[in-house]
Image 1 (cartoon, rainbow, N blue to C red):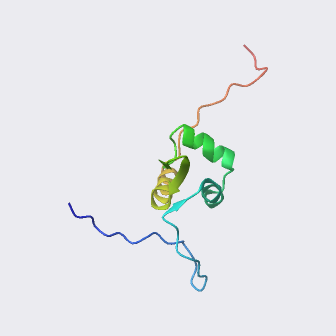
Image 2 (cartoon, rainbow, N blue to C red; image 1 turned 90 degrees about the vertical axis):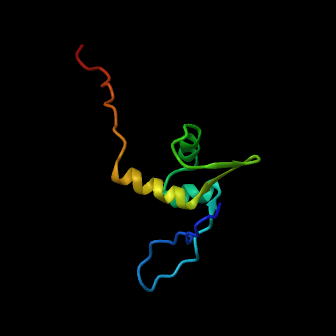
Length: 91
């Protein structure tokens, strides 16, 4: 079984603004900063299985390419929010 080579994802940058290549996977602190959420929110999403992640021993890592695809997917198809009940409304 042969695998097809896929180049590593790269940062979306403007011309003239160079960044180092993306890592294959990110630790929680880096992943949370890259996504723009808190580590606590990232951990809650991880526990609910909402975000791509892998466990290696005691470590949780977030593979960069799947996380980027996940972000593109939820941006294109945002989750449906359930309405919240109003407190003190008429019954």
